[in-house]
Image (tube, rainbow, N blue to C red; front, side, top):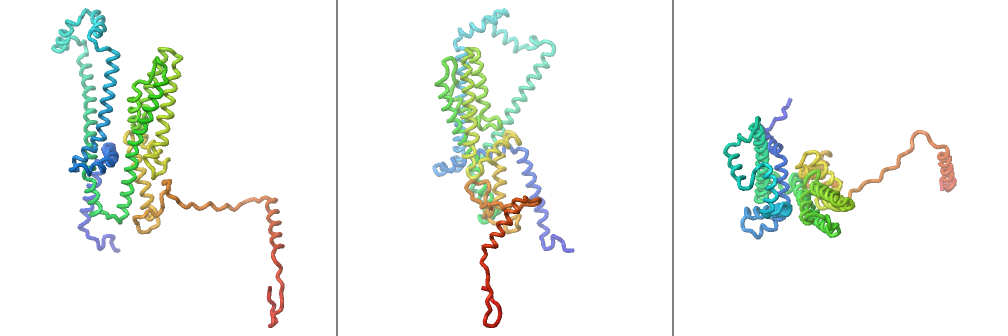
Length: 430
């Protein structure tokens, strides 16, 4: 019996096994940090259009990549700084910044314990030097648990910063060296006339549209929310109003990027606070929190999420499929499903367009999408009309009688044929 390896260079087998092992190791690393890699891919795609435009104006590719990333991160930093500034201002207005007001607020509390502002420093110094005198039985254990919890939170924060660094590093090197990777792939693995190149090129173009559409959707949502909340603040009662309407709109746009809950993480707490204020001041003012919640749910939340996001995020894909990918992705995979769901959708759709039909038919795989795209609204696919189904089983006597009558009428309308003898004696029909 002939072996399957007859005529094959057996020295390549160990090399292929090594390649499979290395590929499996790489796949395991990506699987363990799938959220970090997908987020880095997302940052790369939303930054690439900016990088393409500024690369011609900046002399070095590294500087161009850094400036591109800074153009994305700087607005986020400014938004966080603006939010902290507004929060500090509100706290100062609530508590007061005057030392006399603070002393008037704290002095009655300290006086109940026999303390004053003058000897408060001595109390703090004594507590730092000998904390055991203020701890009862089990106090040190409780303090150790509290320190352990704090250390856990600090470790989680450090881990998040490490993953953020990996995301930015991955996006940076992809921006700087993506053209080199593409040229290496075309030269060494698959040329421009291969099906693999056509497939990956289609995936790349679609991912750019979908991921950059996420940022466009967040920006449009922020603008719509800011306009809506400022309009509500104009018609709000004098007793209550929308707090920092413009900032609230910007935070709502950022909240649209949060998986599953989305911008509800922003406007629902604000609606509850407004409802509490209205209930304490005047219950007749509860109509304003209800209007605020309705406008947030319908205009700010539903319309962009169902109409705008699928359009700007996947204009070459079916709107329903993009919407389902954005909903099911976070539910199935977690926070990174917001980016992984659309990625899987694009991979499956273009595989079905370019590769799958010819594989099923046993034909050579080409670079042309022979089957069309059923999820592309602009791709017209001829769908034959269904043929009528012949009736089976029992028949209707009245229908049969009508059919016999029509048949007899057709027979009567046919022309009569006559027979005439020909010259050779045979009979011919006219």
